[in-house]
Image (cartoon, rainbow, N blue to C red; front, side):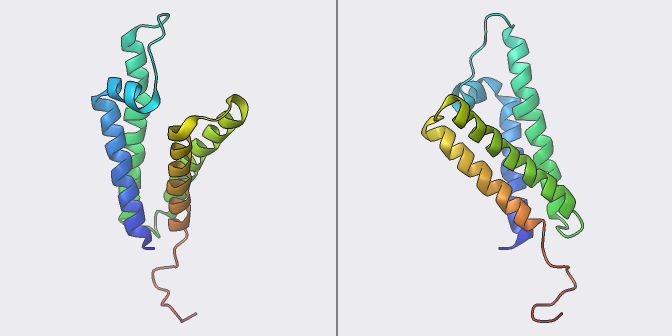
Length: 137
């Protein structure tokens, strides 16, 4: 596993997810997370929230991941933090499964995806020092 490639791919995917949330919050609400607009709130407010979290935050997390991929060893703390954020998403989803019951196939897939992405980033955050040569101490 090449930590730089793993981090780069996850950064690209996160940025794409984020840009999708910025450009089309209605699509994210209807097709990805299953949100509906509560009549007690304006539609613009709800879409703004989706743009903020699923758009803005994921775009910034993706860009931070991409920047960290340029030098994985120097930015391992950033990569570790982002990995823990993904694991936090998975943990929150699993708590929901315990409290509310099974989230269904898409919810379990999402939890598995978040677990894998977070785990890969945590593993990528602990590479050998770049001056270490395999087989030498």
